[in-house]
Length: 338
Ligand SMILES: NC(=O)c1ccc[n+]([C@@H]2O[C@H](COP(=O)([O-])OP(=O)(O)OC[C@H]3O[C@@H](n4cnc5c(N)ncnc54)[C@H](O)[C@@H]3O)[C@@H](O)[C@H]2O)c1
Image (cartoon, rainbow, N blue to C red; front, top):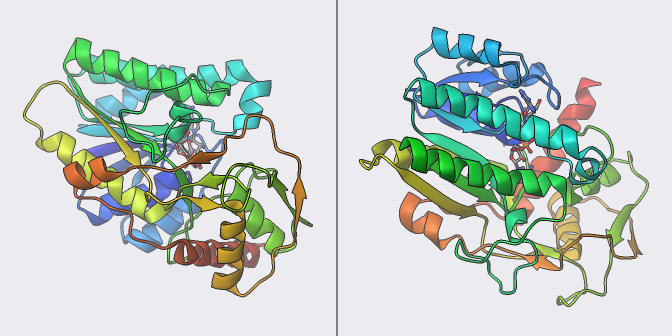
């Protein structure tokens, strides 16, 4: 089986490519390296023992995409390619709508024209906004996300539902909570481009001295220690869920399938708990200061991931300490490359 993995040199994509290769899939990556680097391809090969086929181009280039579909018999796609910086999406909404949605539609057109099914979409817990109840299951009502980035995820989901219904296709919408950590080999991880938006890369860069202090945005939330609570899911566990979701889609006998799964641990951790866990796991200090709340941040979000366990036989297995240990190993690897 040959799977097109868009954004396959990116953070979650590269880990998923390794899992696919290790499970006997052929992989074709399309990635324009707008947020990744070529050495990740070499490292995927080092970890998986196989080198995926790689095309460096922007998925908005329809004619190049068509050539890939002409050259290979593709059985499915996992679509990671997207811009993902929430803050930047507020400043450049058109860039986000264009990149995230035009790329998606271009691939779906190829699927439609060539009668291919099995499409997996990287969605996000951002589609739930600040949910009225925790944990969040898949029936929790969606709220319009505040950021343009979040809106591209919600719109992407709607496009895929229409696509599956109209053209009788099988799709899986995977709503990630907060992916963290790196591959145990320390050869794959999240690349730090610019000032990190997310907590864990910020914690890591503070521990290594790149940033002076971690800013904790608010300690007056209605949570046990006052800091915001999220569900941190280890990236290798997350990657494994993609293989399970794909195998389920492929085994489905119905023509039209719309699967939706929350991928999280089911456990919320506060910002201070993450800092403590990082310090414990790596025996380092993370200096921090408490600041005012940041606009748009929600108080708490953690998953009910029972549906994924029931239907995919998947469950997050890795502890927060272990995930944060791998993050630190990756940071040391990045520094050794300088
Ligand atoms: N990391 C998270 O916290 C998180 C949470 C929820 C959902 N997601 C979604 O998961 C997916 C993967 O996220 P990630 O953290 O691995 O991001 P990433 O930026 O590391 O990976 C995305 C990859 O796609 C590539 N890309 C972007 N636009 C492209 C285009 N037009 N053509 C070809 N390649 C393109 C980038 O170069 C990059 O390698 C994204 O869709 C993201 O929105 C991520």
